[in-house]
Length: 294
Image (tube, rainbow, N blue to C red; front, side, top):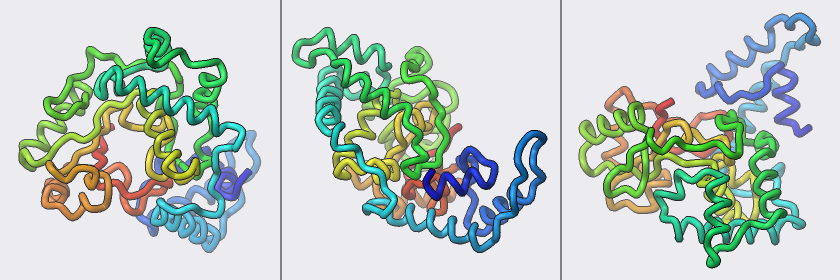
């Protein structure tokens, strides 16, 4: 068990996914948890010294602020999986190109397998490729240092398409009701220069994004998880969405977006929540573009 998971276990916690408070309040919350009496049938939880909590929190905040670097405890994809990793990534990329970006974002795992079998230009996934995707999905992301909860537990979970709506000129879908209503309100309050950059993401879409990020990180899975939630852990599957400034392009997915007037307007509105703040304890980089809906 690595040090981070040992720390969580010593606190009697499965994860700290729900804790997103700033450092001082986070420290106070953890101290309070450490002093709670043990539940019946559970071993007593020892009080955790404040200095140990501070050290762990400092370590986590350091990890978040250095999200794009290889760090000492990072986990890399095993060499034995490199070949199948490349084949899976290539096949997923072909499906996205062939089916279309928007359609791919809603595609379930079973639909993906069927789609691949149906087109000779793609070809069916082999048994070892399917096992690899299963292994990626079911692996405990806490090992990577990602402390967010798993919000989709089934690899074959489906997006109910009738519950989504395609947003014009974006190539993305949003869930009807909550997400769509929030986005339309933001557009009205911020202006037409605010655009939707990413909406609903199925397990398959998140799998592809995560693996593509891992490739860019030289198969450092921990480093990839600091920029993209592992499949099953993304709130895009439940209603969150990303926004940006029209014309800013890929810089919308960097801290550059926080310097735009669109972002400043968002924050001034008062009713907008950012999922991954600068002081988040998920193990994820600062994402000023990620709008929290659920």
